[in-house]
Image (tube, rainbow, N blue to C red):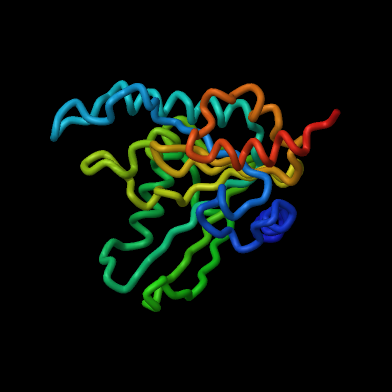
Length: 217
């Protein structure tokens, strides 16, 4: 059931195969910059700036709360033959972090990488209404996932929060940003208008074209 309702939402938002990057592969999408660009990422060659990481965590949490509620959590785990870490250990680590039980549904797909190497794609689903996760530590882990010594690397670009009734998707990918996707511009216009200062400058023209041209008179 979780698989079916999630992929119905993906179909409605125009990204049926859950292609990455979510922002570019979805017709109605927003990309927010979470790490404050006014802050240095590192204090020096060895030390991460804690203020930068806190800013990313705060913005991600704000966007999550502003877009919530969500009913489905999807974690996509990729495994290649050269990876030695046990999948069960990784899932157990995730469940400890989020205070979740084992996933409600699990599906495996055998795919290939861009270099035609074999890879397993594991889709892990939780019903957030039945088993609500601890979102704060999960978002913190995503925001730090790419930093050596801090990160839970399997969370990078791998976590997807769905509202399958409103057909919305929120995708925090790492400290650099959060993508939000809707079925129509009106579904997520409130974010475009209320959080405009956080929209990623690099992609601002694409977002203006999407949201200004469809604006109601």
